[in-house]
Length: 159
Image (tube, rainbow, N blue to C red; front, side, top):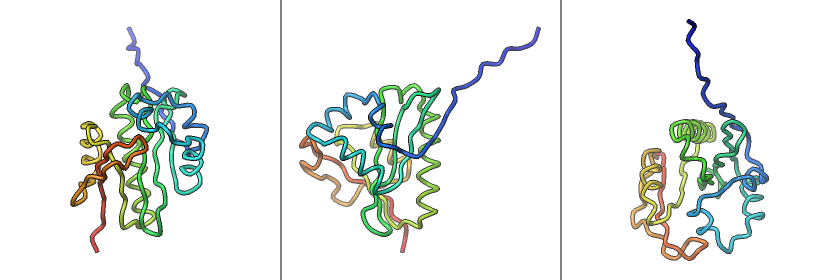
């Protein structure tokens, strides 16, 4: 009797577009941290002032990520996870890591920075796994759009 193979999920990574973010079913954590933010403007900035990607699994948007240009050689990393992201942890991590590392090398970036909510332990582990280090004093007090403290991380190329 022939063996039946179960096909894995279909993974598609495309350039980020603002409507992709609108299609996300954001996590409760993301919704809370974005209170008071003009989301249409934020998504437009993500689309026009840097580079980003949308990750779809079986046609469903499960996350968007990218780098926002601060000034030459320096970019700010961002991630918009959907509630479905946790269903595909290894798949998603590999797709995100490949894109970030390739872009950092292609553009010869000297610094990439990002922030993580202070109490978001999984987020801290994830960015450390990507190679980011916590900045020297690290806490950006009352920095987030919901008035929350954020922890600043950096990925810096040696001089």
